[in-house]
Amino acid sequence: MIIGMLGPRRCLVPLVVALLVVGLSPGRTLSGASPSIRFEQEVVSFRPMLEGDSVDVSFTFSNQGSGSLVIHDAATSCGCTTAEYPRRPVRPGEEGMIRTTFQSQGHAGDIDLTLLVKSNDPLQHEKMLHIRGRVTRQWQVKPDRLVLTNLAPGQAVKDTLQVINLMDTPLRIHEVSSGADFIRLLSLPSEVPAGGETAIPCEVQVDRMESGKVRQSSIRIIVANARVKLVEVPVLVRLK
Image (cartoon, rainbow, N blue to C red):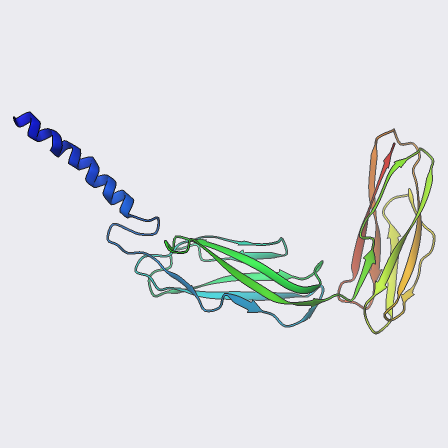
């Protein structure tokens, strides 16, 4: 009879422990305290800027819960931004800040970048923030790369880069150069008219290369009167 009474009591112990574990969320402690992250702004807009400029953006938040808030990560949607966030726990009632810098080179038009913040808030482990604005491009080169494949040894191939001026003033070209002797520039313009474009013809010729091998280099274009001074166009050549 004693043995029969002890059996159910032994079963109650793991059952109670299991119920306690199930009742706890990742951000909640045994005392019932849990953090709660709240941002002053979830969308920050920056003023229109020229490509090549950068802007610092800050998101202020507070812990409105009753437990310590821990930011695990703040990941941006592209390599043009990096984020800094508090590494120590943020106590109830305290404020913190997530800082990021947007580098605009390589971007143009309407911008909508995201910042994913991960924390131990039990109700919102992930919070999506936005950085919005507009970037104006002053000039560009098309195509943005030259890929020439299936060339025969000694074969010469001509191609053209177009320098497009998006400004209402002439674009002054300071220098055009190739990074290898198998790329020959046939013409070196000095200026692109306002709102117009200018061609840079080139010739690619490969000798003393084995079949199937690849050579890589670039064409560099440097201008004098734009925020972005340098555009480098990769050139890739492969023999058949």
